[in-house]
Image 1 (cartoon, rainbow over the protein chains, first blue to last red):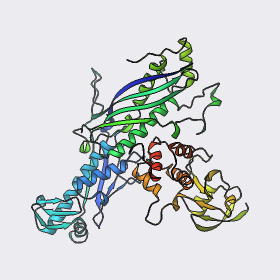
Image 2 (image 1 turned 90 degrees about the vertical axis):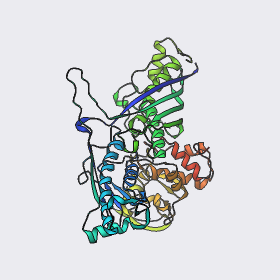
Image 3 (image 1 turned 45 degrees about the vertical axis):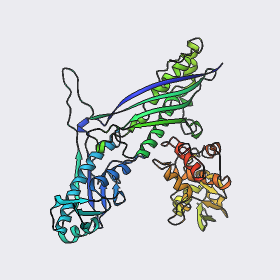
Image 4 (image 1 turned 60 degrees about the vertical axis):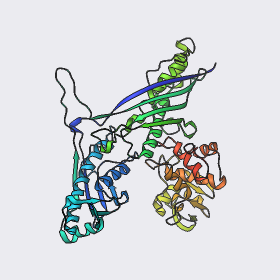
Length: 340
Length: 160
């Protein structure tokens, strides 16, 4: 009886969003009378950072400080339509909609400022600090707040914008079945090191090394955090989570957090991440977003590493101790595949 | 149903309430007192999101009978910040991106505070032990462990 080390590799080309009905999302942006901007979305932040990233995108496009932008995702009944937070589409689809809405709002903002400064709107620029100034004449300036007040109480103008992102529908070619399901891909490659106990069948992941290409990392710490958490979910899917009973029948199946197993803080795996940035042309500031693929490649990499360690090829998940032991038994013992 | 008067201190301030027979502390805090910081997760003591500190010890408020806190000190996440000044743990959770959806965060903070109150510079293993009763679905735990290390003035895996 022994502990066998194994190493597994997997890579992924991950589609961002989908093409069902053009995969649309809408965004609305409007200013409050004190010169702050509200972004209304129906794209829910599940913790992945939707609000933070759309806030950054709106601020960058409007040319105002991030602290002056608020994102409201409170109500899908009253907010603009969104397909939803899934399919790794949030940053890309919603971000593009926010850019369009914020671009329209910025145009209204500069037109209102132009009226106050008695110049042409095309001669104006924002400094990103809450001021609008005449290009080349920094003395001629008005704050975004004063512009909003003038628009609201003097000019009778809204500083608002509407945005929608819709990808061109792609029909299926009846002869070849060919279609364009997505607009861009993110990529990753991942190596998992683990140990398999051939006496208990237990698998312990010891280290993950990964490289993720997610377009521009719009918020690098959020990306890193999403990748760490997502890889944990991948380990959990690969080795722990199931509603099936281990034995002897369904009445012994997991019904709560005591019996539906997930790795805890004691099973945290050291995970080294390299984030590569290859901005996508059609993505908001090049950002594709990590999305679901932060979990996906972990599963095949673990399955490959288990095979490498003891020669057992598991093709159903999770890879429970029972499956590993049955595989070892069927093979007449552990069959380490060795280093390659 | 009989109501029973209970007096205790909530985050340092006196609280006097009537509790129902069999009412649990989580329900009392959320509905009776209006402190929504402890979260209802599983309601059976396995997820840890309802963790509060009672007389210095981390306790699962969903499994604590409300009437048993008579005369005791109860601490919740609501009591961590001092006016506009966040608690060191809150700052560290923020700096280390230790929250995603945020539902486990109040429980994690209280489990961590109970640990740091008695062990100001805990080892990584002690931290893991202290939060082992708290389930997080998003972060993979590493950022939470890092945040607690940082809050106690120790290097994290990230900072080395």
